[in-house]
Amino acid sequence: MSARQDLVEPCEELSIRRQCELMAISRSGFYYEPVTESEENLTFMRRLDELHLDYPVYGSRRLTVLLQREGREVNRKRVTRLLQRMGVEAVYPKRSLSQPGEGHRIYPYLLKGLEISGPDQVWCSDITYVPMAYGFLYLVAVMDWWSRYVLSWELSNSLDSEFCIRAWTAGLATGRQPLISNTDQGCQFTSEAYVEAIESAGVDVSMDGRGRWIDNRFIERLWRSVKQEDIYVQDYGDGLEAQRGLARWFGEYNTVRPHQALAYATPGEWYHSPESYGAKPATWRWK
Image 1: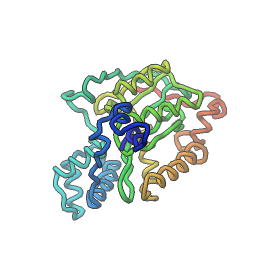
Image 2: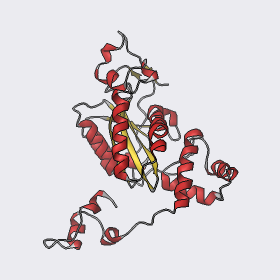
Image 3: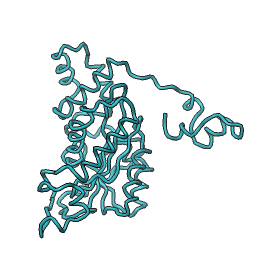
Image 4: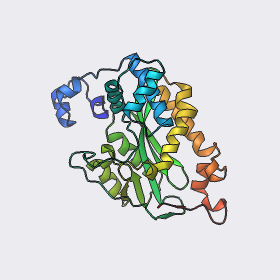
């Protein structure tokens, strides 16, 4: 159920029909109860997520073979459907045969040859699948590219653009903003509402090349860390538990956890006090 559906409930002042009209959702959409995945499929989805971290270039064929070698009875058709449900796809250059979203504009990649030498020059965002003991969620984060500092993050039970916009707005609420916002070409980030949220803040929009995972490598590395150090270990049972646990992990990631690429300082130290870590902070330049 989306955030807008959560606001619709029986009351004497407004009928369900009128509330749905005001929230721009259909009544059938309000009453619809999504079909949950079976326990077996949830197990497959978690394992597929683990395999995708280890082998990001593997598509449905190879992933199916790996699962079958582990003794799991699964065919490629099932693996393909579950990967689509998870929002996961293999990393490789693809022919431009489909658009990320109908009518959505694709923006150029602005980081090529750009020298990134300090905080708030580039923020990046991405979405990842979060397996839990009894279901799954999606996680989006907004991260400062130079310092790896996570400015904001949000959990959602659906792959829509609303929770991405909330994360972006929360990042701006810190009182700082970047020159460039970089994302992939997913339909959540190419949606008119999301792009408007970026451009209305006076920030330039940049998008990765198709199949170019390396263009957004830092946040991909963040996903590996949060999953291996927290999500897989904790095996959260529900969204509330995941919200609390991830809040704890991201807090420690920003302010306590030493980061090897930052000379073992924390992302928070680099982000808030860059001048304290060498007369000439590290510079990232992308080809």
